[in-house]
Length: 519
Image (cartoon, rainbow, N blue to C red; front, side):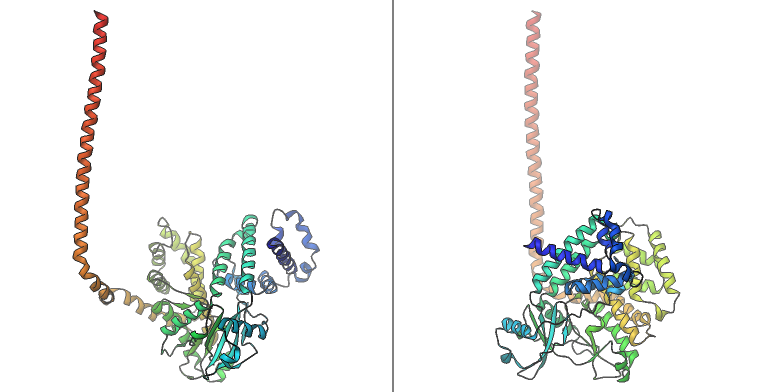
């Protein structure tokens, strides 16, 4: 049964590929290459030829293939280190808007998840969805205590659909890797593995709720960012209920301007939120595209952002943070040798990499960018070019840095839409320098001592016993070694005596024989 369902799905996928003139993917296989001429009989070949770019055709094909492929396209769009820019730009346009499923099904799923009828939970429940995406859809409601809430509900049977399509994607990835030279360059197996991990993480709405709670704690009482409160008593893996927020979508530029917002402050605050998440908290919202960001109407001069959808987050350890901060500052100063040294010392590049060669490659990428005015230079694009260049030197790029690069591109894009003259470098430099100063010097040393003091004080009474154990073990080892040496020496002496005795017997026997022959 599984074989036939997979076969039917494969036929449908091939039809969509042919429809969008992507049949070269099929005909690249050695099995079908002799039939390549058939593409000229494809009516869509002539209809779409020279009308749509390959990126546009791929994007439209993914939309036709359904919600899981749309989500896969979104994930792939973040891997600009693996796919060409023209395809990445088109895949970023996937809005993840799909037709909603029926409200009666949504209500039934809520009742099954909460073991309560809708009127028992809600004073009012809105039948029209607020949003509908590939994994879930969102409805609004009012609880009996008057709280306005948003309820996120996983799509029915989404687990089975994802498992089926991921299984198919893995099969396709193997075929592309084995038979397509062009496709192999994009590391299809690696991409599918990343899509699989992202999709299965998003199926657990409790994980998303935990991400939201952590982010809310990090920005508690902050004038920069507001995170809706999670209402945990009405949450499980399939249902997530949170406070409903009111705000202007950040992509509604004209509405923001006409409302009287200070657009320069708004753009700069967006950048500040990003660097605060990365360097202060080491925990960042990794899906901050315009559809997930709103602006509160409460303060026009110093606006506050509101974030939603916390299914994808990223985190950096201190090593990653230092790597990023020092690289950015080195780029600002155009110290390419320092950039090369940082890559090797951080372990991202093999230790035998020639610094001068890598430095030259970075300079070739960076100098044309720096010839532009600072306000036109993209941090995200520079980071992307750096990753692409380093890939030729066998860099091992960590997934969290790819997520960060994608988030930085989103924040930059939003910031420049809000305020085209945004100088991100000027906004970021003081933040980076301040963070680095906190990590080095006497103050940083004392801070680390202060942070570790409770742990050390807890362990201090155990130190004499530990010292005694170490010394006792050392003495025991020395005694064991002495005993082993004596045993070895005695065994050697016994062995030498035995060999000497046997040798004497043999020699004596030979001499007796010789004397007996002579006489």
